[in-house]
Length: 270
Image 1 (spheres, rainbow, N blue to C red):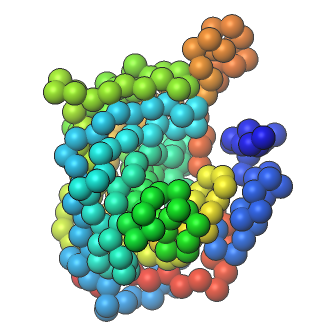
Image 2: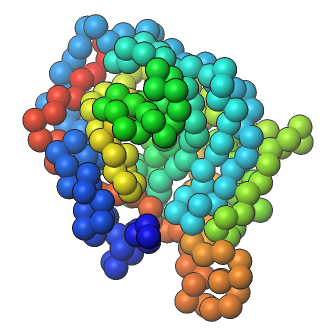
């Protein structure tokens, strides 16, 4: 039976390695990106990393740990930069913290952002997402930091959807009246400079199959928008109504940083 992992003192990240062997590996994510230790790679041009995504999100679900958005990714692509193959967008989701000062999984020189969005892609040469998880280059994840600032226009459409999935396992479909374009949740300014390194999933089973691409420039959302993330509940509607102790909001869903070890973090050359 699968371990009921989470972010509490009884089942949080410090316990994951007891149930998922790879969580104790040497290629784990996230890490604290130390800019003084980064290698500038002239072969990594920001402009050569290209992505083509569906303009519309299919639906968004409260997983009990975060919100997760799904797309029809068959025609999508992510190529270039540190990637040797073509990758397809599978889903995107977010991690955040109890207040605006913490929440991102990756840190930069010890600094945390309020949240971090992950756009998860899989290597199409493996034929399926599940097969890609078994290989060291199976996934490519774009990480986008979120800092507190001005209201984000496209995120308002996300917030409207989240208001209808307050409880675990609830899902809202997007339609002509409520759309969400994932590309508008990316940093707006060109070139989009990034850091890249070899890492893992940041949630169990913590498979060491991810080529991480973390953008340097954050996007902004307002405090009120981030509060909508924290208003989502960990439990389903029946549980939360039956017992007050189950009515806990998702206030913290990020994994603390792991040692970088001997891994190299490279930076794109603009």
